[in-house]
Image 1: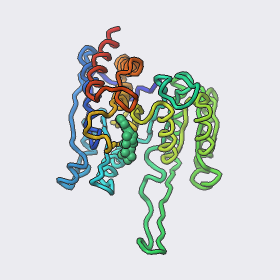
Image 2: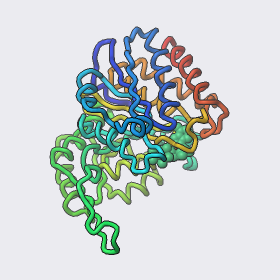
Image 3: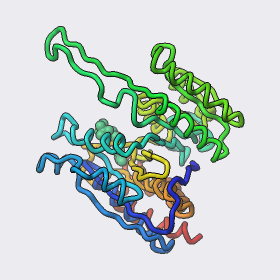
Image 4: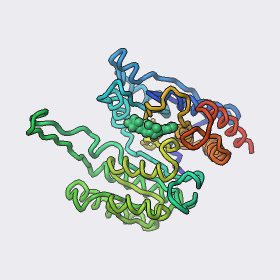
Length: 365
Ligand code: ATP
């Protein structure tokens, strides 16, 4: 999946690493291992600084996102490599909301880029579909919508209880994500952009999406643009995923449709994502969560994390190294050097070691 090098710089970068909870601390070190392996021959000076923000720290010290963290990440780092957050010992998930949503909002990471790309035909549950059919990018608005936490309870805990959750959409917020989707399509030679909403039912919030979409699409006459209601999109993406190149949608629908897409392309263990503000410190994380059911067993699939780090390299402007990482992941799938979730018998660290060697090989080919 082609991407946009957004923070192209010199041959040096500082990366903040936040492994987090559950399988996060198992898969993230594999991605760092692979990055270190390609950095040396490519003469890239990547400095990694690890932060232990997690459920453990929250339970131990009551600290989720420490004071000053946002400013430090913004001013001192080029990118953030994230693992996963979520722990059964913190049922409210408060630390995860503070850290992940906190960073998304406070760093204004308005683009959530989730590529859906089938890397090996045996991985899709769709019959007769191959790599050429499933190759699209979902752009999810990442700073507004139902995730802003505006709302409240009335008469909580009583039979008359009312819960309200507001859907917040600004013209600026809607316009910048739609425009980003068109720009991405144009820069990468992709012909089709689909905007999805539920404007037939959400007659205020998504009327704004409709109006902004109609306005912005006029500036991109070279790109075919269409609209689908989100329910129709869910059907169409399963019926015929080959009809999509770029999908742009709101925060909630993007969350759902990109998980559906992840499943079409082999499951959560493989899906990468980027939380991006062009030109500013951005955060890259696998789509999967902390998967507490398999944490600590050494069998978590690190491919999602490694593909995530490839997205990060692309954001940093390092195309050759990005291609090397992706080639290594394809090779791992081809040669079945994979963990049990993909039908293999390898352990997390074994896959990481294999990918590190294979990426260096791919770099020198
Ligand atoms: P969260 O609420 O944090 O998203 P979750 O457990 O609901 O966490 P995930 O962690 O995303 O959801 O994963 C759901 C299931 O998919 C896991 O329980 C696990 O069985 C499987 N899974 C997810 N990621 C991986 C992975 N990297 N390797 C292997 N299996 C995975």
